[in-house]
Image (cartoon, rainbow, N blue to C red; front, side):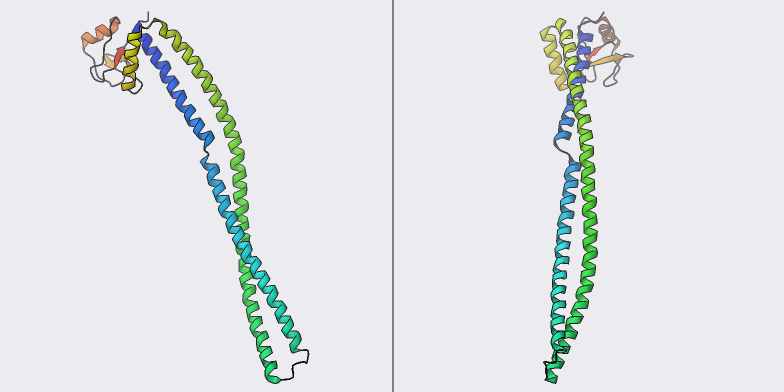
Length: 234
């Protein structure tokens, strides 16, 4: 038949189960409120978006400059071949100007080609970041559903355990229970340990034979000589 101390051990087992469940609930709430993966993927998306915007703006500027330059070349060419310039020196200056403008055109065309490559790469990275975020959000929905289900299950288990604990506490004297609670706080949740082969299951210290007999008898509180926990039989 169970004695007061073995009943206390059963209560402790229930309380340890509640402690574990509540810690898991804490972890679940943290996971639901702060998703590091989503935060990281959104940051990556923001970074790639800024890079794409910068690359696109640079490409656009080069296109506008090149377009303006080509128009300028056409205007000078038209003037050169119009026959309106009679002065040889002025005509040479205009030809030199066209040559300079065409060299600039070649440079701009090369720069524009490179800029378009950078823009294409930036667009690819941005698209990949968008897909990564979409996948992360989809996984989050699945993960959240599973976490919420687990949370509900844990709350139900805690309620069930606490009802069992309340029933077992009926026969425990208040003074004894208060002493157990205080000891449990000092012993990191485990105030009571089992006597296994004359040794404490918590610290492994072998107990004196006289104490073992008192523990087996079960009518008084006996403490482990090593860790100070209450010892009970299984």
